[in-house]
Image 1 (cartoon, helix red, strand yellow):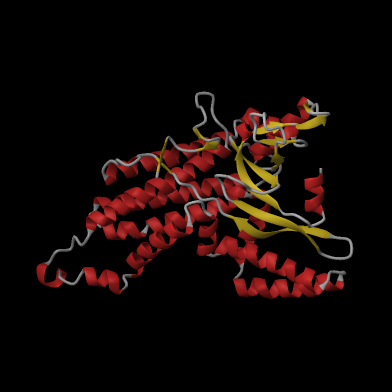
Image 2 (image 1 turned 45 degrees about the vertical axis):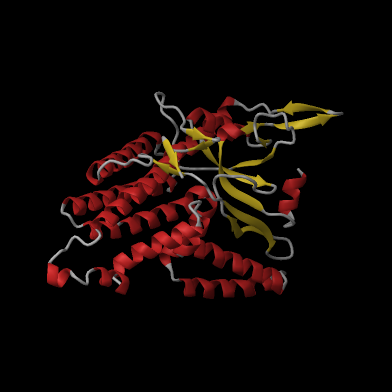
Length: 385
């Protein structure tokens, strides 16, 4: 309770992330003397079924959790209040659940979007994103490990994996009187990923490997955008919509106008500026590639190296032009094709495996499936450094 109160009055942030359901205990530990006693609220079955229906419609409420004070507990986190939601996710087979973590985010495999309760007037407070806490993994997901097949075969496997995930989304989704667009967003990302992979495969089959490699960049950017939404689907979607509709300059102008409004409502100039900066930060997190990359657990160094190489290919800068120096006289058009093929297979594998694992952790497991886990975090079949 003290952690939640600290968040409500703006003293401490809360952290939006994804946590494996297998590491969260429903209920909480009460202390009696030197002993812990587990307390779990009774939940009517009707409540659980209602939440299950909302999840299948496309809602993704977050479990509010904190680290278990009982060091002997096999679960790392406890969830005191959202017992019905915990049960619904468990029954549906959602393995990596949205979570709001109170307390310091330590040793998490997924990154965090941190929010703080800010004073917006004499009485009102609003919760807005103030920073990120990037996770850095030492292993990356992969379907092929360190020994991938030839490009054509590898891309066929990746396309099939994306198509399989699309079908699972269709089976998990339930339409209703209320339209929630999270499942539609997931499906559109998978559809775009499939089209991109098919385009890469067609270009490879035509021997146009450098052209094919340039399409790895939009596949990467697609994953970065999805990761922001996946981490905090109930919080970030509004900024993704805004970023799709207006330019940053227009949004900043609107935030400047709102800052004046908050001051009139009783906020101090400092409090109003914090709100303005939080809105701008959230917009940039949804629209600026480098900001999304800071959040993504692959790490900034990988982003700089990969994005620089793919951008050079796409824009055919002087460093790429230099590689074609001898083609006029020698007629050799196969300039560093091997490098391009290696880049295509390696990164398309990692990006597709990451995307598919995130989606499948979020739409439930079918009866014949079992969770693929590594330290309580859903991953594809293989991991590699």
